[in-house]
Image 1 (tube, rainbow, N blue to C red):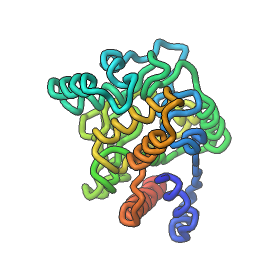
Image 2: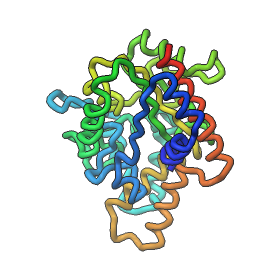
Image 3: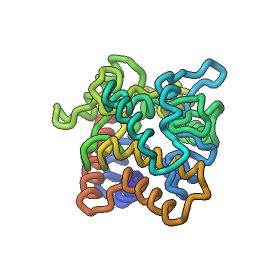
Image 4: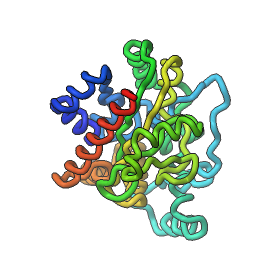
Length: 293
C-alpha cells in the first residue's frame, strides 16, 4: 500500500532521520491502523465503519447527510453490475447535479445506513480507540505536532495534493501553507475554501490529536495521491461494498471486484511509486523545517 511504502522508505532514509534528529523532532509512524481493511482490501473496518469518518463526540447529535439518504437506494443494487434502470438513474442524477455532487453525497460520511458506504458509525471503533491510546502515550508531552496523513484515490494519477487537515481557522491554515506550500511550488489546498479535490468531510481522524494532545500546537495535511478518475474510484467502492453484502457472489466475480478495488487506490507501477515517495519525502522534510522554526 501507499502509506506502507512511504513509511518503509522513510525508515531507511538516513538523510531524513538525521535531519529530524538534529532538529530535535521525534517521529511517530502509525501503520495499518485498520488491520482488517489491510487484510481484506477494504476501506472499512471490521465494523463496516469508514475510519476517517468515525471521529466524533458520539454523545452529541451526529451529522446528517440527506444527499446520501436520497441516493442510498441506487448505490447498492440487488445485482452487480448494476442493471440498466440503475445506470440510467445514476446518470440522470449526475447530469442534473454534476459529478462533484455525486462525489460529495457519497464520500462526506453518513451515520444512517450501517451497511452503506462511508458509514461513520454510531460509536468509536477499535481503531479509533487504538489511535487515541497511541497519541496519549507518545504525544501527550509534545508542544508542537506536525501531522501527515497518507491517502490515495483523488486527483490526477501520481500527483500528491497537499490538503490542509485541521480546524477552520485562518491562522492554522496559513501555518500549514507556510510549512508545506514551498513558496507556491507545492500548494496547500483546503476543503473549507473549495480549493481541494476533496468534498467537505466529517468525522476526520486528525481531530483525535486535538482531543488527546490538547497542549500541542497542531499543524497537519493529508498527502492525497491520484490513481484513477474519481468516477472509477466511486464505482469500485460501490462494487466492493456490494460484494460485502453478497458473500454468495461467484469466486471469479469476487476476485475481479477486489482487483478493481485495489487498482482504484494503488497503481502498481514503478513510475507511480516513485512519484509517491519523492513527494512524500519532500513533505516530510518540509514538516521538520516547520517544526524547527
